[in-house]
Amino acid sequence: MSYINYALRKQKVLVTGATGFVGGRLALRLAVEEGAIVTGTGRSLAKAAYLQAAGVNMQAADMLDTARLAELMAGQAVVFHVAAWLVYDKGAEGMAHKVNVEATEQLLRLAAAAGVRRFVYVSSMAAYGLPKATTVTEETPLDTTQADVYGRTKALADNRVRELGSELGIEVAVVRPGMIYGPGSVSWTVQMLKLVQNGTPCLVGDGSGHAYPSFIDNMVDGLLLTAVSPQAPNHAFQLIDSHVSLKTFFGYYGRMCGKTPRTMPLWGARLIGWLRDTFNLRLPLTRERVRFMTLHTLYPDTKAQTLLGYIPRVGLDDGMAQAETWLRNEGYL
Image 1: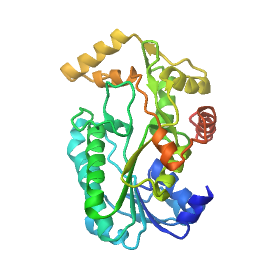
Image 2 (image 1 turned 45 degrees about the vertical axis):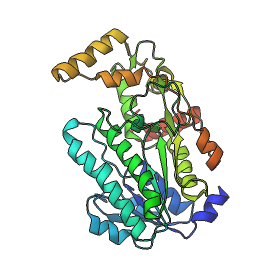
Image 3 (image 1 turned 60 degrees about the vertical axis):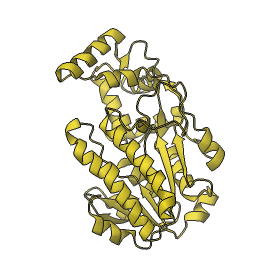
Image 4 (image 1 turned 135 degrees about the horizontal axis):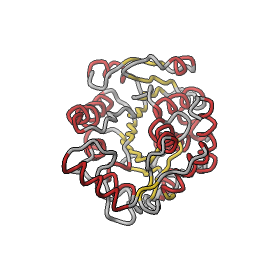
């Protein structure tokens, strides 16, 4: 990682969403290991003391506050746009579009106006929707009409920042991670463990549908490489460590808590999804979620390896071991 250290040392870097899981880990790495001059943003700084103690200049900022963001943008060399509206409820669609799409475009325009060299946007594999192709690459069209609010707004923003980069004269690069798990992850570590602990069915059919794990430290490595590599601008990169079955993925959490992950027959899952979507019932599965749980699509990271030199250095066994240690320390196990 010496090349990254050389490239980012004493560089002014802005990380939006630094009070979140990915943004916090990235800001900490930048300040402590990479020697960057880091400013981090968050709507609330209540949980930002550890970042401030590490030398991150934490600033309260809402993604819809253009004037505030313009102030923070001044003098920055690199911007990592990690902040996002993560609520999946259809009732939050308006806010999701404002934050994930409109505010992202505005932030890119502010960055260009301030002379920022590179803008790294954190998108998601959710931007592809539920593709029918057996293999998805970075050149696969994103699904901007999918039903999922988060995936649709990430797809719209992903397309927009790549379109605007050359027009505004700023280097733009995009990363599309999978299921980001590890110490600190609520969505793909804490909640997955709780599903198994509570006996909630988390597998459909034979459980052979794919999981797409991205360990947090591998993800940060990929972000840093995207920020400094001369080959990164005007490209998107999939950052997915491996393709394993959901049965294997949930099996790790089962061994942690001594329980066998429960499964549901495919016909039953499809029925529940149909009932929920048709009658708007409070049921745990939608038809779209059932499709996701039975996907066998591949998302290779060949492009990141070739252009960035990206190699996931933490394997699934090690990543899950680190996740387990953290879960025990935090009292979840």
